[in-house]
Length: 141
Ligand SMILES: [Zn+2]
Ligand SMILES: [Zn+2]
Image (cartoon, rainbow, N blue to C red):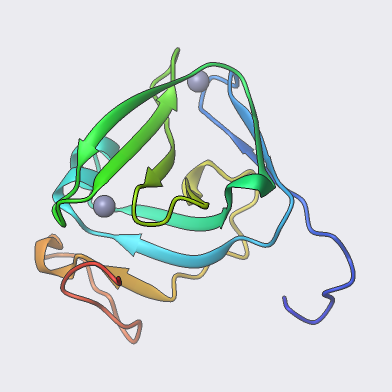
């Protein structure tokens, strides 16, 4: 994946209904799985899959709504989702203001997605196996 750094990579994605579309102009970094209870509730699933890019490398079209959440860590988190279908799309953290965290399941092409770390493993659902991938009890910062 990192063998052709001269070629610009464009990753696209969007919500379920298609009203929100986004383009990432840099390679998504920090592929991680978050097992915090808030991600479980927001996704209605066992965890959320996330990648990060600099905010300036993410352009979004369509109407998104925001929910200001206080994370388990105590940090302020802005969770953004499609106005129409409710798909969770982005998370902004006040601890990393230059970055935007993208719900990796909304990428059009998830073939290259391999998580490098599990976070908030202390609230991980019991049936989920993390295998060889490092698992942190809390937040990486
Ligand atoms: Zn939508
Ligand atoms: Zn989480």
